[in-house]
Length: 434
Ligand code: UGA
Image (cartoon, rainbow, N blue to C red; front, side, top):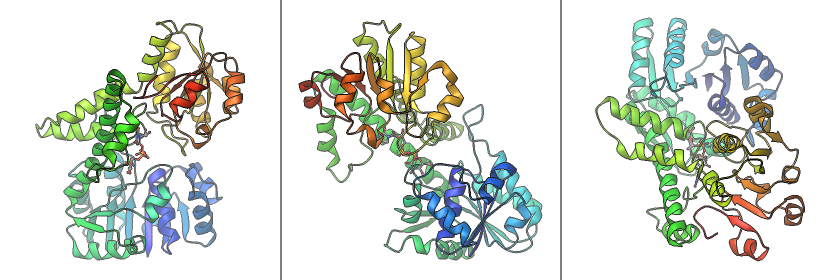
């Protein structure tokens, strides 16, 4: 099938590449000339495990193309995906100007039937707004479909190629058939394509992310309580997670959720509810708890150093909001850095992928190490913020040699407590014994 993808951000690029991989011909369009030039030369603009190989293969085989010319991208396309940014506006609601602007541009160019798919996370009612734009700007038949993405950064290729489910919101039989044909290769193992109306589909995306953010936040609160009552959150997690109704996944306490999705989507859902005079109060609590959780480790440090962090030097492992990405949007590490600097401490950080992004933002207010052990040199303590695999089984001899004191604050519960105590560490993690 011939496909156009408008917007080559994270979602657009993963969608376009993965659609090309199964034999479709995909043209991705973006207004950023420099980015398009680079992609045409085979340079991939994001880090996402497994994507690069598909990106090169589909370009070489002529099924993945890039352009800045919208008319060229959509001319032969049967389905047009809108994968455009929907940043939060000043009032917390998603800003739809990119989506609606692109819809208008497309409407002026279409010459035959198209299915236009909103892939960006958009508030309930957006499909209706997009339909209105088409109705006002063209007489050609266009079906508007909501098809939210459920990609996790770091495993996005796997999530796209083998989705747990595909959600499609449409009221058109014709569009439904085309979407079914398009997604069929991805659900051959039997996972469902769930068809529904546009509004339910739009809400599904927000509800899924908000539910997951709530699940994590609940566990963060359980962890905080564990510390006060002498329980171990690892045990409680296993104890509750083996109940199939609760499930084992997304029960890991830590330094709060971050990234470009959960914080934005929880806020947007609360805001959408408020707009129809519904107080979705659990979401307000989730946001408030998460704010505190992002700096819970700093509170632990303040307590340990009796409020005096001035002049202390800390090694910080992990800057990305989660492993396998260079994304630092809403990353807890940034909040931790700000708090520690405010208290007069200095920081040397190491991250396998996200250092360049943090350097752009924080400049030389902190130091950057080439490897995890360099960051430890002369540090008063190690702080672990992101659970990159290479931090899981480090060389403890080198840690001991390089650290000034055997002190670790672990925001991701990576190590066995007893082992750490036996090795003489002061080891403070989340929801477990000190
Ligand atoms: C999330 C959803 O998981 C995807 O399904 C969704 O498509 C995506 O948002 C989106 O809306 O685009 P992502 O933000 O890439 O994906 O990352 P997650 O793996 O969900 O992690 C989000 C945050 O939760 C991270 O800060 C992570 O450290 C934290 N987390 C996750 C925990 O603290 N504990 C857990 O048990 C799981």
